[in-house]
Image (cartoon, rainbow, N blue to C red):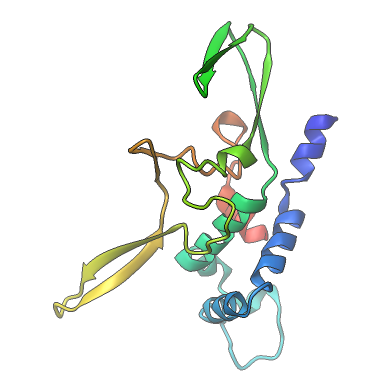
Length: 185
């Protein structure tokens, strides 16, 4: 039952709520989201707003919207990851060793992972562009432009890690299609 409560806290309803609250919290966020979403309007003249009014497939690939959404998930997702010890194990953290006997259930609160100061600068601060990667690209005409893509890897202790952002869990228990989950929000 307790596991179900944690799972319900990480579904699309609260994520959509926090996305809306944070997006509306500052005028610059409202402007940013409006401008990005407007890029995907199929018929800008139409007064009807339906699911067919937007190119949702393209919109969920937008690096700026993805970065904003990823930061919302990083700050607000209340996901817990559960692991069963298949054999006796010793795990270290903060210079201490902890023993987990075979059959133990380990709960990892992802919120703590998302606030790791070794991975994120100012982890308690909302930075909508935290998940953006800027790369210089040269066009066919030789002009240099800034190409913006979604940042996937972060560094911890000087090494790249994917484990710094786990809003959908990890391993076999991970949401099968995180992209679909984002589209639902």
